[in-house]
Length: 296
Length: 308
Image (cartoon, rainbow over all chains, first blue to last red; front, side, top):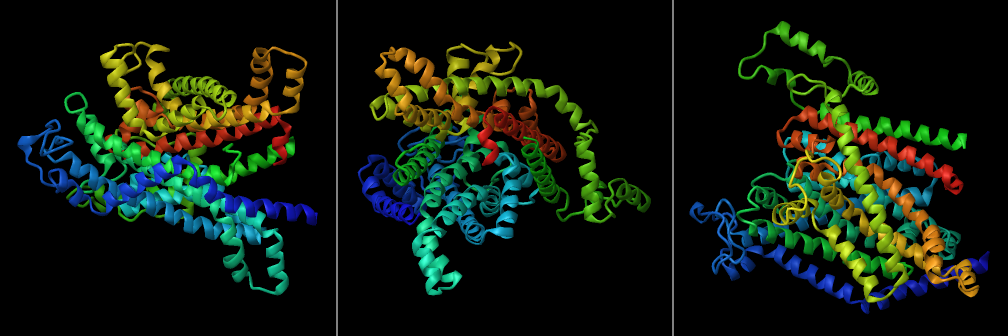
């Protein structure tokens, strides 16, 4: 038994060190990371970057220039209202990344707290949290959000994030719970118990640092999923509303003119797809490195 | 087996109560007085207000209101639309369309997922493998409505291979393209599962034995590897079935398919609150029941599942 534990311990320390070595050699990791840094830069200063190519203000909309194809002043063309598509697409990056990151952060906080309580203490708390997660997972993701958002009086990016987080945390919580449960059994945690450390110190100092990695990898992919969910909900009409600037809103409008002004559909789609793809690719690279069998 | 069945049913009841309570709380207990707003600018007479409040049980405690709502759900009462028609009746006529679409999508997902996964698994680590992985993930990253509109433009309008929208041409012509798009979104997971499973099976002892005794590789792959690797994919796809029934909202909307998803799509667009909630609730409940059925069915096929 002890030998088994020891062997398990060695293999996990090796794999922990191995994550960076594995990930460092994969182009998928660097390409997606570079793309995300670029997108974060766009989200930070969308106006300046758009201004570099033409119109910087997404709300300057001369109606006479409605649905113009790409030209020198408007590299992505203009939409039905005459607004510069590029300025809108770049400003939309900020909204999408905000919703993706805010939702995932809330989920992570809830999932780490509940998952740790469930996994570390077990017993009644574990059972209650498990049932709670079951109930939330009883909603197919989009449908739950549709029902709640349908009756929310005002739909801002923050409210949308909270609603999405409400339906998204259980998957992460289950993941945290199972890693906490396996770490809890390891010898260094038992040693910490034997020395008489408090539960708080053991959890924060020993259990959590060793059980967060899988959840973080999945959370990276989740940011992408949340961004798609926001765009889909907005497209359906239960997501963001004017005056928010979002890819979902732009695409929803663009769908009506896709035969006459396809550029208003193409450019937001490209940015949306690129963002989601880099998040999924980054999460994948991290997960593959954590679990070299790469089965999931 | 009966213990497992009982446990699953108890779980279903708990989840059912939890889910319906969340829906109820989200929809019906928000601030605001619906009766007052029914009158528009002029206040309603007191006796009308009293009658309406009694009709909708607004003066009873929240828990009684919820129980009444639950009782309605159990008798398939999903409420009425603004023009007074029963939502359940409207749904009944639309289920066949959605089920046809979901099953077509499911079959396509199964077939393409297994084939891609098999090819990727047999060519593990090569360019073919990586291309399959990348393309399936890329497809997942494109929002479903962008994919839908583009496919309409290319295959419906430019090439004219399939009808642009509507189901008047019947199955399969009118269903293939929307079903294919729905299927694309499960391919990344399905083909990966199959790939991992193929790689594992290829390394197993019995395959080595088959190679050693000189069985042609076509037969090893076609019969033995296929059959042994497909099990986890089937389990995954069984669970997918529940998602597919609710996952066709956007596609039915774009392709103007008058199924349950299309009804929800129209209800949202025309801001018919009660209809949105009724249809979404129906889809969620179907999802729950399908999941339990799938669970029970797969435990019959693979008894190990019962002891998870």
